[in-house]
Length: 301
Image (tube, rainbow, N blue to C red):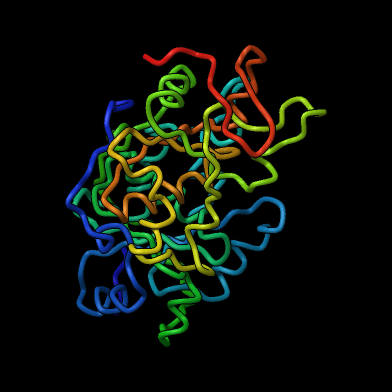
């Protein structure tokens, strides 16, 4: 029977973690579940747009014991006029959900999705930010689980009685006022697609933050699997000089895949949760278009 049940830093934090502390293979998950280890599996579904059938897909067959997590309801907070499209969830509400999913402070939580791997990366990031220490991103998602012959179950697990305590701030975040400093003295990475980064000089609200370098979040993956350490090291080689790294995207989703990828290299990057959708709510903030980073006009510090 399976059981599932500080803001910014001046320098990049190099941790001794290996990629296995961030990513879990389907085989390792199967071994952990069979051993009776305290593992909580969460399937993340994005229910808007073409993800409207996410919960239905979960109900037709999921990893045994896995709880369903709604991206919109569970991983995104209430929007305001300046928050952007993906604000952080409220700590109290998130703690209640974690306990319902059966998460304790000592649990290992494994997150996965059926489609866009960045959706599960957002779950990984939110839980780590909230102070859940042992969170793993399932490499390859549900497809990898099925590829090893993993069983699927239609039974929905009952609500758990977890005791997890949310402690926000366990991963660094950036506010808008941090961006100028980071763009000039560190590395600011834009994880959106190249066309979004370039924008259109004829359209306001398009382009990127001056000083940001384009490394699309989708490049972190080969299919639904994270690139290996050597490939990730090559991808981010220009940004691994020990200076602080910050990441943003459109609304704080694909950027979490970049934070995940860097964490697999032992590098801690800060996330700008509001990302581009929050940045452009203030018309006085600088933007630029084209394929070059440009220079940020705000002073560092």
